[in-house]
Length: 160
Length: 249
Image 1 (cartoon, chains in turn red, orange):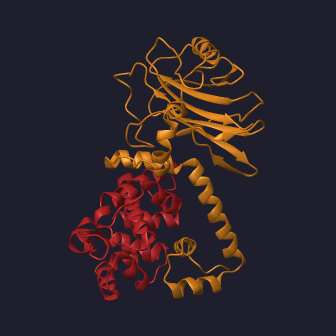
Image 2 (cartoon, chains in turn green, cyan; image 1 turned 180 degrees about the vertical axis):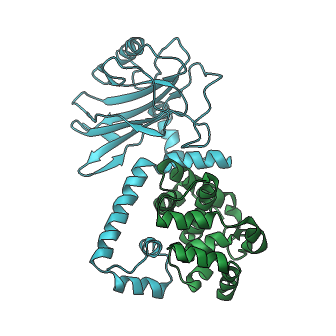
Image 3 (cartoon, each protein chain N blue to C red; image 1 turned 90 degrees about the vertical axis):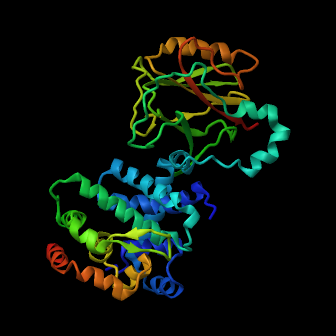
């Protein structure tokens, strides 16, 4: 797929930057994360087969920001922040066991973590169906992955 | 109370919700949502001014190792305007600095050229001016620069009346540049009625610049026949970026 970088950014950059700002609450980090998000997507531009890039960019931006939150290793500052930080810090064992899901519909070999799914559900308030559509999974698949984190998710929900 | 979540409102604005959902959201919008939509559009404009597509695109392509595609319009115009084109945008590394500081990763993540960015005020909005664009007396401009790791710089302009105007640094201050992303100069600049053109230079260097010497070079160039095309003659390691605005008759 041929991609006009400027046009892609012009159309979706503001949305991605706002997403990164909301999650990271740090302008400099948010701008970096926005750049990382586009680089991630554009590196796979030849495999890109998606008609609505906003969902893909939203998912990639979410993952990028979670990685940055995870790297901060700091204490949460408020309730929403706490939830995001705790999602970002979800145990690696769960990540290895369940978090990698093929997104063949969008990218060959692209994956999305359970942490991203948890963020979409718990922070963004997306329904199972909406998450499933965004990440290219079945609804039961989304539910199944989340259910494996039941104890952890219950703890997260308790923090809202 | 608004019920449309942020992510859905973003996609609604982009027209990327499924058709039935797009319609459902449209019917659901209340006054709060409409205010949120207006705020999103304002935010879009602000972000694209703060982080212009050309600058971000350049940074992304650099990280991806991509070349910029030549604009079709430029390819068409080139045979006719070959001489003039050389005058339009001059980036003149007169003596490339071999050990230029690596670019701060905070904004670009890659090394790039220092950038000179000019916006023209249009009421409450602004538009970014391209090189060789027309401008008129009375236009109010916002000058910005992106140092890209070069620690010192001078921003000035010369016009068709041979006048030299210093924009940065002012009041005898240091020529030290901010290295944190794009910096807007504190004061706007109103174009006067000088004829022909206003040409802006962003001179960057690895060492503190002698502002007086740069101004002297600018005066020399301003009084020459190739004021609209040539670079400043400076006997120091420096990098020059220029942008010319042609004055509307």
